Image (cartoon, rainbow, N blue to C red):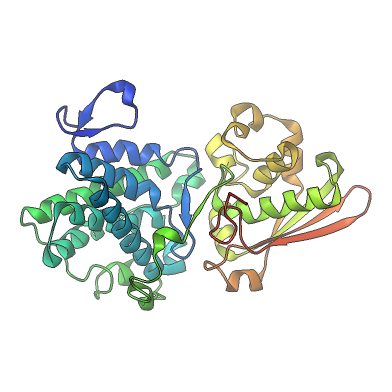
Length: 354
């Protein structure tokens, strides 16, 4: 489908194919989001690496950028995309996959930097990108593959927006805050204007990002970490557990509640009960733990049915600044244990190296 000539490589080097930066980033961006083991910027509820790096790599190859220019563009893309996501806020995230909708703005900014666009050109790029912003959560209800399309299309559209801005195409100068812009159209009105420039140049998004330890939706991670810590602390085994209650913030319900029973490998990574079952039995929830065979495992499915999610107002109040979780485990012996985590494994406050 993509151009057969170009300087940008596809992630599968065995294909020995180079193409346009927009098409290469479309394929590479989609590929980066398949296994649910990427990064996360908590405050914006986005996975910026899945859009910024594929786009910046493809454009850097196209324009012959050096390493310094590439890194600078990535920092710019993270900063703009994550701040756009923070501005759009929680009401936007309830219906839209912010990685895609805010990500396309970040891609446009990163690409504009690599192309050397001035302020007007960069604003035009962001405006054309924002008017294409898309990405709905419906895919989880239907067990489809649209989530992978989201970052790929954000890469493509953001690059398109910047290259056309370079060539004179005008885009809106106020695509976030205008009366018919993203904040007005794609939220309930509860935006966060201070996110746009608060601590700009001081508090960088790229060093506030988390890395996933578990190959599942990040909303499951606080509960997984709490459960594994509880089992280790109290010597609780998988077969000892009668039931699990996990206390969560509202956004976890909004996303995880769409996956049903988790009837596909991808859906199962968005089902709290199934992810906790996998983690409790295997001591981990890695890529290799989510398979077609695991979907048919009666012990996992039985454990899944004994997991209940409960809303916790105190935890919700601190989201998305803090992604916390509490689990209450009742054992078949009658014993009951509780464990909480304030920061999921991979957060800056709880790095993977500890």
